[in-house]
Image 1 (tube, rainbow, N blue to C red):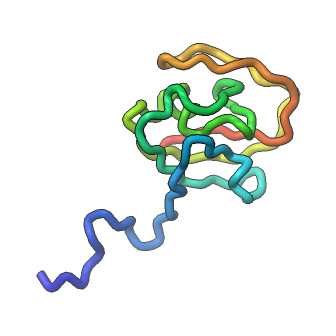
Image 2: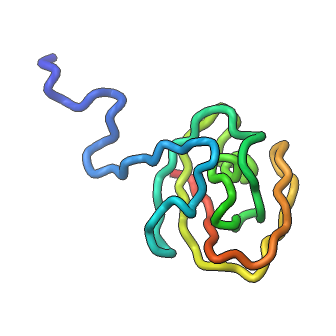
Length: 117
């Protein structure tokens, strides 16, 4: 092998670059318009970090990685999730799922949904 091919860790050509999330990373930090989707890489240890409001549709200031655990998309060991940006909602209903409890909230200017990569 001559070493000129892509490395095993590199994404395939044309694949979207993942955003490396931090403890407080939320969709408010993604500057795309509603309807856009972004791939987010969540490191381990987010089950107790960051605020979380809503279920299935989360407020824009909710922690993406904590929402991904709550929604069953990843475990506390981390992983990849797709964030689909959405418009405001008049209210958000919290729930208890996968060991995490999210809270209710009123109108918030942005929201997001999660999808599997």
